[in-house]
Length: 265
Image (cartoon, rainbow, N blue to C red):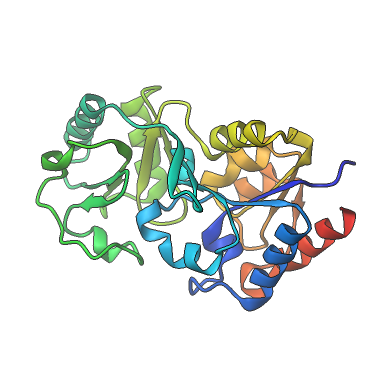
């Protein structure tokens, strides 16, 4: 088995503890991996605007994948390397159509460098930029759209996912990451999409990539990577997609596995 040359890891529920903190133990392992020549790539559902706290703690990391694959970012250059955005008109049509099916739903929109959300979204998302709610996100679709998010307290997550999937068809990619909303990205865009393209950019083979995750939005990445690891706290579908299940995120289990990968280099 080839040594791992790229580690891709989800943030919330995987790299971070349940309280959102990055433990010193995990940071040391990531730094040691970087110093051993392994490319470390956080791949998160968060947009850039709500990941800056983690970015500041991982100042040695160069490449980031945000918004479930919609944006690949180089931190040192503060530059978007690759972006997949929803067409403005399509995003608008999807929101209008979803409002017919889910009349009590609210929406949020992630733009390239900010976010817009309707009232109620701040109650289900623990981390938000310092912005005021908008009465209608449709008033703000004037810039590149990374993702459209839909939340509806009258629906459980599985019902909402099924209903949203039926409405959007193949026009967008729906997924969820444990929080009470469904995310819509541009067609065919997943964490795996962005990770495969970045690995190619960097000259790495699929078999040289290890991925870590814990939720539905990690499945594509866990399935694609040469080696994949799900956390003990992961959803059943993420565990099924991964080759190996390791310990809990609150026990810094990822650090022990990263140390083992470093030892192979």
